[in-house]
Length: 563
Image (cartoon, rainbow, N blue to C red; front, side, top):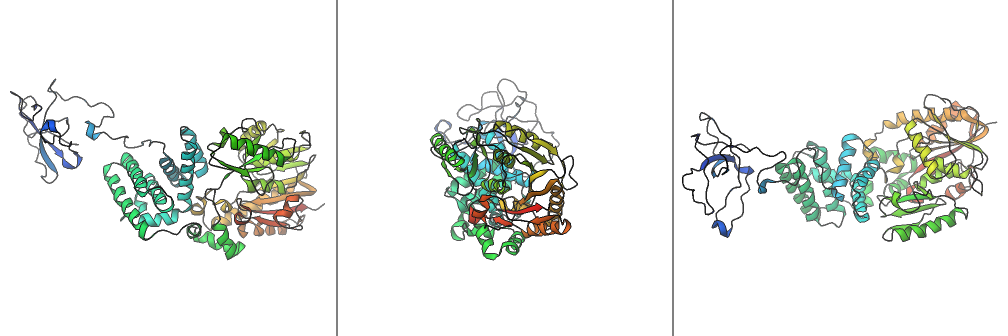
């Protein structure tokens, strides 16, 4: 805000009394201010209906300065401080008088941790930094520990709904932004998209969605951008009543990237593609896997379902349908705070991932390798499979991964679950076998890195982050990993190849290339009882599908190294 003396006569600043009359012996100062920065106080009876501007600090203007444009400035009379004619320094962070105070500072402002603001922050991070939504959301929810389970659930719904339907929401916002949504900064874009999701797909009143989004935009980008957001969202809310977007589950299909829809249709057919893409819910529930408590895994699971329901009466908690020992949890807040986690009675693991671990068919006493262990969810499942009925560890479990930090977390997880430690190896299977001993293991699980397109419900950002050309590089990496990992399987030993994708390029095509290159490998039926329920008695390859099994989607293949 610029201001200055209209006539720099050097006399003391003037002032008015409470009725607006000049004080005796004091001449009023005339200053220039930009009209768009002034918000007048409402009239009051004490002022006789006069609207007075708030106090402004004036700075001298040289007498020779050209007069400002009358269209942009207005002349006001303003009182100076009565204690001193000198200008008082403004305190750091001050925004002037009471009418000019903003609730937040501009630039790098931290918005209040409401569900809408948290969802928008994660959407912005996903777009700006290429972050994974689940990890960023977990971080933000831990920072906002004061949020109720209901608010945490709302933040989660807004985030996953916005990301899953982002292409549709972007078109909706584009229609009310003349310069296009891409001209906006990531945070403003995210706030508008989250508001658009609320308007189109939730029961939240449109005025509430618009109001909070505008307040956040104004706090971070100023009044001008806030006004733009207000106009755009009000127009969007009006158009949503006359031209609503497609509703789920059809909306999920319409929002899927065209390249991915075509790749799915080539892999599993058009009807199955439609069913897979429209499968819900979004977001999916959290899955737990209980430790076998000695009474049998199903009895232990049922006992923990009861305990968890008592601890979180407003949550929805029930036994899962496919994996033994799996529990589904919704709206329970931070699962790490539920009873049983600290004691190591259960762990957090997606149900389809549990099924992949069970399909390896581990028996106590065997030598087992989790070749792409990551943070160890499947590793801990394999470690439990090696235990005897009385809980003693029989056999040996090793784990390998490209990232040493993940192996460190794996070790901590095994300790929390009171499982035997694993021997760990840092190895890049795309290059070779590293220090992993050759011709050693009875069973090897290769859960290879992939496009992740089977996890769209849980990782909706994947559909816009991946491109069709990525499949070529991924497939080449998967072939190298599977071929090298097969070298550590003993003759007659078994290997299960898995990816959280159902695309043929990463599934049957990879297995076929490895079999062509390695004549010592062959496809054989799965050696695990659960395979019969999932596929058939003699299945050598199969898909776990969201619309059929209620889990994330996977491709799995069973191979054996010839003796």
